[in-house]
Length: 292
Image 1 (tube, rainbow, N blue to C red):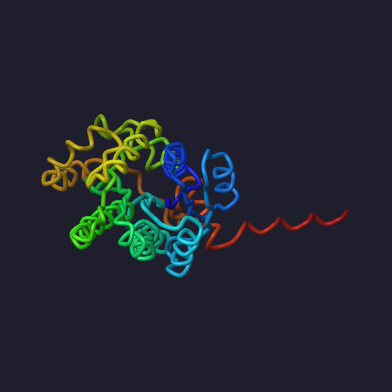
Image 2 (cartoon, rainbow, N blue to C red; image 1 turned 135 degrees about the vertical axis):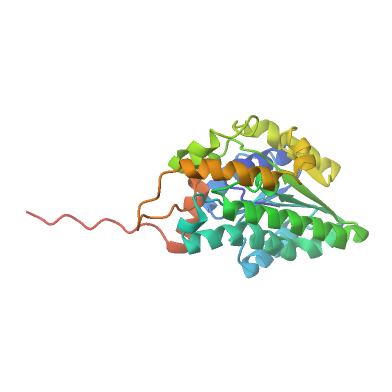
């Protein structure tokens, strides 16, 4: 079962897993797109529209997977959204939504499927990010949510390992997905990213990263790195807050002041737009023009 399966990393992951003979369940907010993905897979697939922050919906998803497939061996908590910009200018509801989807949604996913994983002695993979390792400015919600999701997975591993359930954390740098493309279109986020040091300023192809996630699932690995160089970042973690605090002061001074009363940025990318539509409904149809 993969959350956030309509596009990006989640879509590629279900394609790779289905190609290896697994029956896959797709959970996400875009049922039409997930059905298109499911119809193109070589093996059995189950489409389950659900919001990962809704515990009842996730319990129902778990029931459906159990009913249709008989057991659950692997659960991937991949669903995620992002926003950027200075915390002081951020919209409270948007900032909270990032935490809700990326952290609380992962916990709700695990809570719904953990009884099945305990029964099958299965594997839970939490998709985190370079943002869990590097506390970058202009990304406070995303960094906080991914750091929390990483810590949740580490704590869970210690709790359930003795019962045969393995728990892994996947780390990805900037990978070519709708979310990253949406971030690059943001005038502030896109400009700041180009100033990052190599190799963090690159956008990496999604295919090789997903192949490494699949290999990690097959190994039931505790740590999976979508880009190999991320493994070395773990050794630098104690130094990064101080370094980024110093560099951040310099970079933030270069930013022009935001316009007073301006509209704070929303969730980035097509997945972010789908999340916002799920909570607010489609845009209203335009009023018809008056007849002359």
